[in-house]
Amino acid sequence: MSDRTAYLAAEGYVDELARELGRVDRGHGRLLIASGPPRPAAWAANVWLDPQEIRIASISDAAARLRAIQRNWAVYAPELHRRATLIQELLPKVSAKPLVFGAAPPAAPLGSWTLLDPETVLASPHCTSPFPNGEVHFVEDRRGPPSRAYLKLWEALTVFGCRPEPGETCLDLGASPGGWSWALQGMGAHVVSVDKAPLAPEIARLPGIEHRQESAFALDPRVIGPVDWVFSDVVCYRGSWHWSSAGSPPRDKPVG
Ligand SMILES: C[S@@+](CC[C@H](N)C(=O)[O-])C[C@H]1O[C@@H](n2cnc3c(N)ncnc32)[C@H](O)[C@@H]1O
Image (cartoon, rainbow, N blue to C red; front, side, top):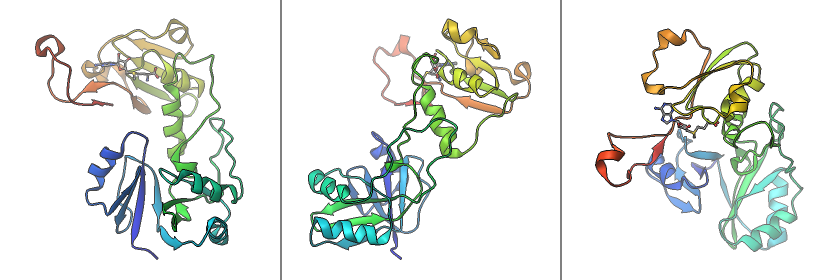
């Protein structure tokens, strides 16, 4: 057993993950290696449990050592890319087929590995995500939804392993142009879509979607009534910044 855990930040969120984790022993691209058991890490796309350092003599030696641990491996190669690719090519192929939303995620254990230097592999046979580097790729619908935002919702529901049942009521806050509402309606839910902006007309026309063009922050729950699910994709800013009076763009990052 090692006494370390490695956390792979979602693309573009390594600073957020570093802040969330606090003390980190080593950074390797988006992979942050910290001592101790796994900590809560909302910004990690994948967590490598019990990662082991393995000294390797050659490319074929690296592949043989990984194969001796288990069959399926995903490589993360922020550096030494060519060498890492040559090792990965000697390992069994892991299916890269995009997932149909609603299908079960891959069940076979998937390990992750990287080259810390040319002679050192860091490998973890157990990771929190069944997807290579925690990235879920879906068979996309290029005709129904008005934008690709629905993929965020599909990913969250797939990772959490739950979804609204037909007939349940979903409150979709920050719903315009309507990708999440489209996805929820497609699951058979009744959707109350709230946004200051209008929905795309073809989404507003779908049966089971009720649009309220108003601020999510001024919503009176007594008017909405009971709901089964609350979804929020509202893009707003922390703090009390006003565009009209400040004269310069907000320094805070969007939240939501
Ligand atoms: C990222 S977009 C939402 C995309 C949407 N989930 C989809 O799938 O199409 C963020 C939305 O938040 C909305 N928004 C920002 N402030 C809001 C507020 N106070 N109340 C309601 N919606 C708000 C914006 O109008 C914008 O449509």
